[in-house]
Length: 254
Ligand code: PEP
Image (spheres, rainbow, N blue to C red):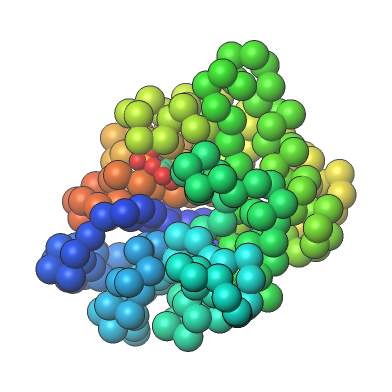
């Protein structure tokens, strides 16, 4: 049995008051379940608030990025060790918004993955194709390139204990969700890619789906054999939706 996850990605959203209301509700709805984990990746300034509200609860917290450096003259960056100081368990790396808006290359993402992992965080490595890439039949080639860069930099065994997220760019924040069959096809491809390099790592690697997951479509997605949970953007800002997605994960049978 692989561990299963529902992780929220708040992106550039939140305020002290709004976070307080959201997390106070969520912590009453997310209770510990063996092999199942729920967490929120919050904007960096609110990590301390998440720590103070969520310590001792079943909800974990994390950052949405980390620097590819450890320390030094890198204005605006924050390191894996810094967020680990505030109890973060997770760090998203390679989100498509970091890749497309902030210019993170595959090699930057591989470095960030290594920093997060070595800093004691669980990296959530995002891969995914654009609409144009899907329409030109390049989905597998793109996600393979993105994942293989990390494997080339750190070795396949570095994926042990980490999380992979397949997030088709065309489905993020658009309301368009990959069908369960479409998502399963890519998840199976990704697991197969890892399997050919290390079967044990592939079997235990949680692969989350991200892209307009909601309470209403979560159960069907989470019922697919290679979908081990979700990375949730917009719906993670609404307590009812996010806790409903968590309930769907707990109820899903694979
Ligand atoms: C995301 O940004 O990781 C994401 C999946 O967003 P949304 O759920 O809003 O599509």
